[in-house]
Image 1 (tube, one colour):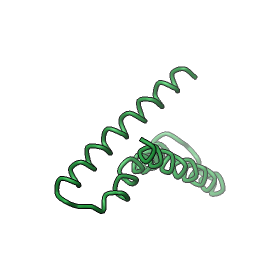
Image 2 (cartoon, rainbow, N blue to C red):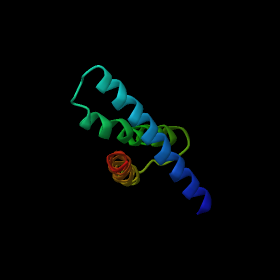
Image 3 (cartoon, rainbow, N blue to C red):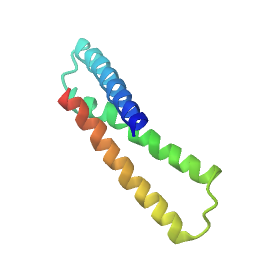
Length: 94
C-alpha cells in the first residue's frame, strides 16, 4: 500500500501542475471561462485509463462471453468515472 500511496501522490501533483499551467494560459489569453476546463483537464486522466483498459482487453484478455464483457466494461466505466470525479475535484481543492 505504500507504493500505491506514492503513485497517488504523484498523480495529485501532476494533475495539479498541469491544471494550473493550462488555467494560467487561458487567463493570459483573457478567456475567463476557465473553471470547467480546469475540472476537465485533470479529469481526462480517466479517459486515458478507460482507453488503456480497452486496449488491455483486446490484447491480453481472452474473454469471449458477452456477460463477462459487459461486466468488465461496466465496472471499468464505473471506476474510470470515479477517477474522473476524483481528479477533477482535486484541482478545485488545490
